[in-house]
Length: 442
Ligand code: HAM
Image (tube, rainbow, N blue to C red; front, side, top):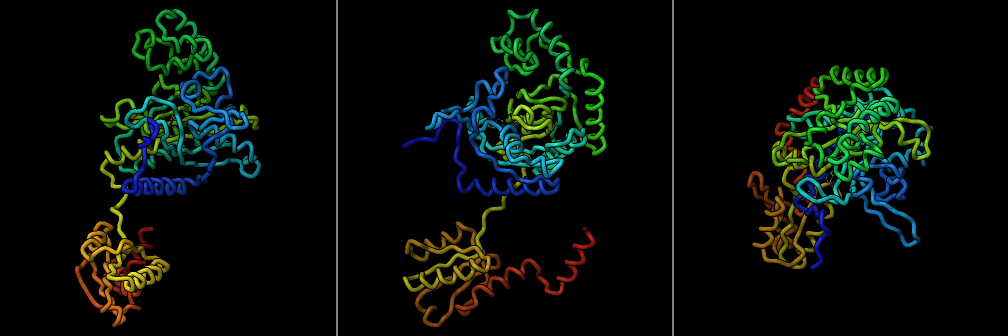
């Protein structure tokens, strides 16, 4: 038996309705915020992710799946969505028609990480990117979209952690004092941090190895080095969050694990004990140079991504039922070849009319077919044998009310539709009232 690669998993048919429901919820929320879907390749030219020799992020230096294709081109499986979306934005000149492009994506990402609960080598992300505006309010909108999604999944205990990395000038000032600070502890730094000290000292603050050491805690904080523009911009973001009533915690150690960020960075954390270190379910920030680095115009962006696996685990923890148990409308039980032929005919008519149907394809006995109807949670069971066929009749049972009737073979579809309408609207005259109610709640 060939097993799946380490760090991957199968989404089996009993799990997939939850995924579909989650994706559906995400799409609805993106519509509320007017973000449009973009689908980019799952592999890109390696330069899309390996742009900068000085990139010190773990994701870029240690976790990408890189390979040569048969024509010796450098290819990388996407470890995240932002760089690919930025590449597509530049290549397709999306900035020409729209001053601001608000985009979302969903799909598999690949990182060679140590697999554990909520951390996989192939995982799925939902992400948004808003490109073309440097307004602090669009940062607020992105964070608010994330919070709306979390609320829709029934999670209440969420913390928005936020920080500002400032603009280039502020970061350069800060990097210099960090170099000065950490250089005093060269002998105590892990080998990665020694490298970061030379290439990007900010990244040291994201180190999981050195994090608890004393000299780490005494390191200078970025907020003391933000210039006036960066400080004001950060205040505007915080004020915007206050305006929409979104609570946040300023975390001055938050630098995020990717090198492209400037100004706002944030993480959305859930308080779920089993999550341990994987309690960050979504994160993002502003990137002012990425589009330029990919040979595009001087256009800024801000975005955020969630791990869908973590969202599902969190929704599960919050007790949110993401998908009702699957139900089909009709199961056709057939006894004999003629009955099976009539069943596929009837099923076809019903399916065209929008009813989901199933039937037996293994010539099983009546008991096994009843069992299967039960397994599929069929609302109606139709039973068809030679006797019924000879009289152009069919037995139909409503499994909700246990009502059983023999009806004309030609009436299956209208009969079921009528019954379904009765349940949704038990009293025909209520139709008007329902419409009025709808209007008054709008
Ligand atoms: P990130 O923090 O690397 O940011 O990933 C975002 C989210 O993806 C994480 O919070 C987590 O939920 C999920 N995630 C990351 N790695 C794994 C993994 N190995 N297994 C399962 N879930 C994982 C980004 O990817 C940025 N592109 C976010 C962004 C968008 N920034 C600006 N725009």
